[in-house]
Image (tube, one colour):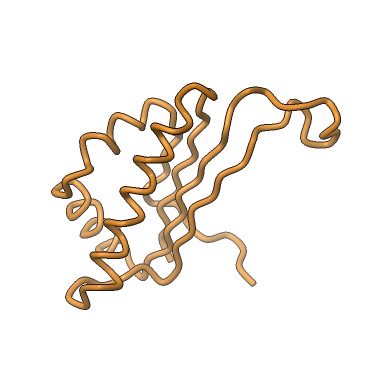
Length: 116
């Protein structure tokens, strides 16, 4: 099953802006795949947010001043991924979503290597 994985490393002064853009994408996902049954939905979707630790093995060392956001979407087929990307490119929020990519690592055709 192919996956879209986006990982954003965002400086503290940009967190509100990028979080707003990611929330716009969440609303697009809801309107497209929950409220509208014409599009094939992802099999699983979740977005995350966490403060980045200086040392993940020793949280007492504090925070880096960055926030990590992830957007994770699992799809049935590569065609579904491409259809979603094409829909997203037509969405009203897309230019803002694209601008946020300056903080992102993007893997639009990842594969699931482990799942419970």
